[in-house]
Length: 113
Length: 115
Image 1 (cartoon, rainbow over the protein chains, first blue to last red):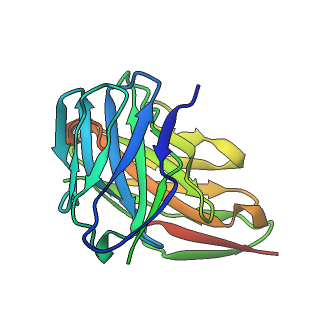
Image 2: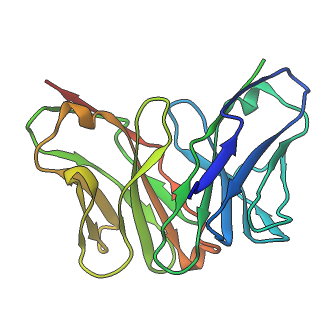
């Protein structure tokens, strides 16, 4: 049981490049979330999804896009990378069954230069 | 809007002494509260949560937290600190009124346990 898998683990981008951070889960959880964590700081919610085909903005959505075509996958897209997007990105899931058991991926460390 | 405050950027404690990491929250409705720990260059590890029931919650590695509704607090405690407890600790909250179980995090408190 892999849980939540994030790829890649590390990436260096040049300003203006684009990339997609992948998040895949095998737990059939409806809720999925993307967070970013700046150095020494807490996690900020970027986007979230409550099921396939349904997404919404979190606290810091600017510069990002998401899609949720399947229950398993919730990719995060950066279209025009900026240095301000240098951060560690975490994907999380929740089954919605009422026990509030969030599962976090191991993170993607992104540097924009 | 939901929010979490961790008033201390860093807490210093000697090994063997009790430790407390503070957390206060603001939500509409009943809060669901969490503590996570993060070691350097690692992901988040779940410590404990309060959903309902007993206000004193026991979690992993000897940690516990007490839910205080009147003070809107959920402080993390441990009776005897270990050097290996040194890490970054995050308090988080969600509620049904916040919508879609969005988990909101505090800024984190760095715990330093000295030998």
